[in-house]
Length: 610
Image (cartoon, rainbow, N blue to C red; front, side, top):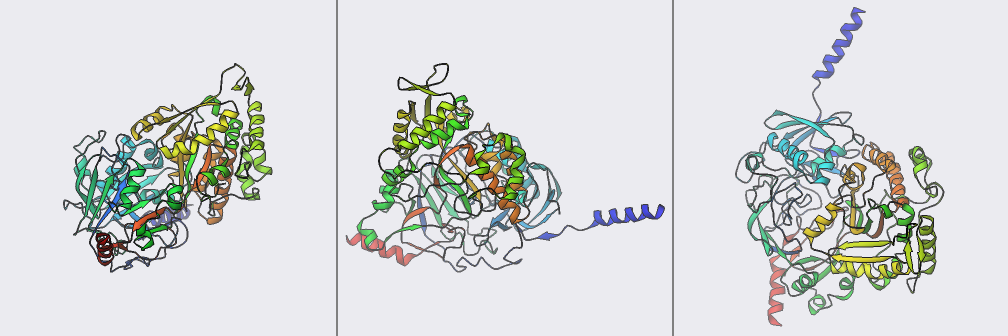
């Protein structure tokens, strides 16, 4: 007995004293492609020249630099996770392998075998723009700030953090609580988040908006700005991270300027006149024939679709506010989905450029197809009573039309579903058993959204539904969503190709009260459980099974009318740039492109000669 006690004590002592295993990055599954100390990513030009000014349009009429709060609108580039101009994140993603992140502020990371904790060691050379070192206190301060004051969806995304302890000036340990299964995703969602300086913000009111230019650590800093007009960032020549393999060949423009254009038509004209260099074109009409000008014939103006497979999802969808009593019934939502004639809208409004999304993860291995597999059924079976029976027996589908005329069959099927849900036509008006009419209130932000809705609401009129469309500016839109004063709103849904914890903010019942992220108010125990399985997956098979099951639950509950799948943006730009070949998962614009002076002079000379 005594010998057994000594053996147990020895094993515990050995385990407690075992050194954590540190690595230079975090993969979702498998191994990292690039070794420690790699010179640069294969998909960049490590010798890209520095110089030039990139001018971009933005619709963001910014009024604050304060990060991580619900108040105010931040300028583009000021707090963007992927662009990371002002603030460095802990890690940086690779664009030629899915779900792999390499240390940025972090020099190395250690993970518990059960993913219940992580230790970050920061780089000794990491500096804020005032020369002060980036320390563990900054990292702790950032995530404590989010927990205390963070915007609803952001705060929700990091609720798995149970606490942290500073182990040294450059070393911090985070503890994780098991909310949705523990995996590398817990670290990866933290990996992307920009870290803010504790010594700059500690004596400032972090709950209020401010237009004081912030202190950053990233490759760019604010040079000048005028709210409602423009903001210009300048490259930091002595940027601390410029020699790291993840940064070599990137951040090549001397300055990046965003000019505010509240109206897309004006922004489009500004590009055609050469006032801006690059624009994402979201209107299919103008993509089809809106840039047929002499500059395009001469090869000066380029139309191109960029790669963006690092994220999948819905770039545009109509979200039903399921918090409203009349929209809480999935039969009603299915009927309203049937009334949207996608094929007609795609032909008449969008030049046939889109393919109807039939998944929340369209075009990826996460998308469900056909019938549930046996493994999917095992996950879904405990929730059978709360799921539509057809989920188990039929592939998901919606009525399709020829794209011409009225889709009468779909409208008749919608009438039957509405009748099942207690809504019947009386004297041309759809009413419930109490005689209350069925009305829908749409809230939108752009004329293009109105254009999408007008054919749809004409179909709703045939069902006896009255409607209103309210066009508002961004601040009003935020307030309306926050108050829940809408029935349908345009929304989006995105997931990393290896899904991360941020999915909870989009879909989990704990985020159902935040319409800014979970616009539809999704709150279903099967969704919560499938999210847990997705985010806790430690093998690719487990991930795909859980994602397919989640997809089926979302589709069959008709929380959204999917309109446009996430895809590489269609872009229009003046050919003034050099660029490397696109990596498989994301076109590295603007960070991996560079200014080509010879091309720019050619365009300038040609334009002057006209």
